[in-house]
Image 1 (tube, helix red, strand yellow):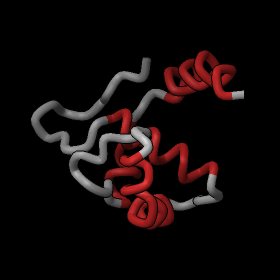
Image 2 (cartoon, one colour; image 1 turned 135 degrees about the vertical axis):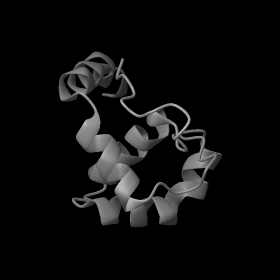
Image 3 (cartoon, helix red, strand yellow; image 1 turned 30 degrees about the vertical axis):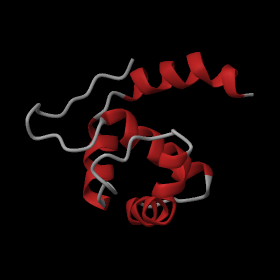
Image 4 (cartoon, one colour; image 1 turned 60 degrees about the vertical axis):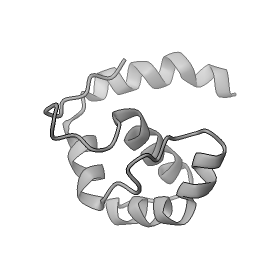
Amino acid sequence: MVKDPRVLGKVKHQLEDVLRLALYSVICCCEEYDEMEEFTENRLDELKAKGLVSGEYGVPSEDTFRRVLESINPEQLHRCLITYGPLYT
């Protein structure tokens, strides 16, 4: 489990959505935060329709991707990816 380092009450996008969108973006060759935002703008409806993200509050901004990805514990994220990664191979 990756703990959400953000302050409750100031959070708009679910941590799970931001992390999934970031992962999908990177898999599709996005390297910068602005590319993640653009990827999400172009694919959010499709990802929501497939039930992969809630997308309740729309597209996370470039700054949201940056803040979340730079503040999460990388070891927690690594453990989650290792634990659940084999399910998708």
